[in-house]
Length: 93
Image (tube, rainbow, N blue to C red):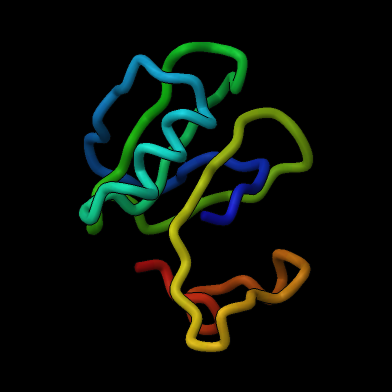
């Protein structure tokens, strides 16, 4: 999972989970159909969980809410900055 400060921009109806952001990220990582999670407040016990096809755009922020996304890269490493982490370099699963 790649974690950034950000918020989803274009998305369908996510599933709300009563988990911390990091527990939600771990849970999503283990689920085959889960693609990403978002929390506006990482201290709260609530996150939004997105299945494949439910989210298409994430806006990167400098602080605030966080998004965790599954990435697929055949090189097993992703670039060190967000500029290189696009769906053409590290594909969203």
